[in-house]
Amino acid sequence: MDYRVSTPFNWYADPVSRLLLRNFEEVLLMFYKNRSEKSPVS
Image (tube, rainbow, N blue to C red; front, side):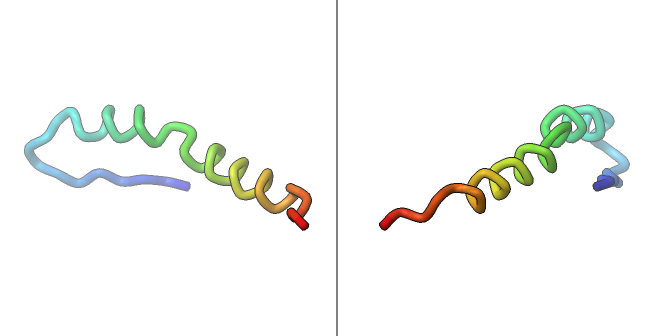
């Protein structure tokens, strides 16, 4: 995934968003992978 930050005033918005969203995709995909592979509760 790619993110784009477009703002004329917050010069720190890009670095902060990169820090917060750095591995968001991997974490989210890992969560759904583990959840889908988990055996159903009877």
